[in-house]
Length: 408
Ligand code: MLT
Image (cartoon, rainbow, N blue to C red; front, side, top):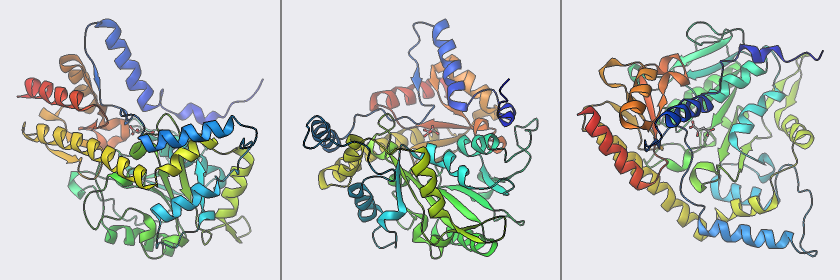
């Protein structure tokens, strides 16, 4: 019989968000008239900006005409989009268009990237963390089993909690791959340039690579907060950056993101020889990926046009206002709240010392509100809870009312 990848058997039963959906569906089945408001998974609710829709319509029409029809596109993405990305997101940062790889999303890329790294790398992740980083390392065989707390042998967990102001400490041991995500999912917190500079210095002096997830970059409102790891000197030789059109431009269902792999970035082979990471990723994409559809890339490029930029700014401001309403509502109840200023996530301390899952159940039962238990993102997330600001204004206002009624 066919052997399975036995590393999958080390995974916890379900991926966090489907597990939440399962519990919510069970609740909804048992309480048919409950008006459940979902603030669990960070999925956008507002329609695509008009400039993007228009660009997609035009592209679809092109596909319907013999003269303008396109078949396979470049696996790395169309030149027009790679150039728009560099000019719109990396101006003055020394990134070239052929260092940008367009893809169907940063979740996929942050998992797929492990294809090009060997077994035996020492891996550091923050705790709590976006679960994809952990689970894909488990699948790739980079970890041992999980302990009772759900922590996997072989991963170095860097706690990020109120105690250290949500800033992970630089490891006092050797690691080879470091996952960082800013603005952070799940805590909604950010770090300044000095913190990232320290990580870049660590990575450069240890030959490590930083896998930098900047999917929420558009939500940064405060001055001086880096939008890209490449704002940091030296990062081009030690960092890969993942970005997404999902959260800023509403592409969660449409699917488009990109990964930046600078040509300077090197890894090492079994013989100790330096190998270009860019060349490996290019090889991987050319073999396993056929690019994002032309209409979707045309839509993504419109995100960088004048109208697109203005509409996206409005969309981002809308979700940030939701975050502010949630944050203020919770704070008025005496709850400690983090994030929500430079990110669409509000990270709160569970009231009354409830565990994350206890609070999840209680909130669902009593208020019909859904959030994400902090412990689902890692052991250090225990006692915290995440609310997503991706929702309609009416739902956010209703949620704040329900929270007030329940917790006052
Ligand atoms: C989240 O809720 O953490 C994210 O939306 C999930 C994702 O982007 O994959």
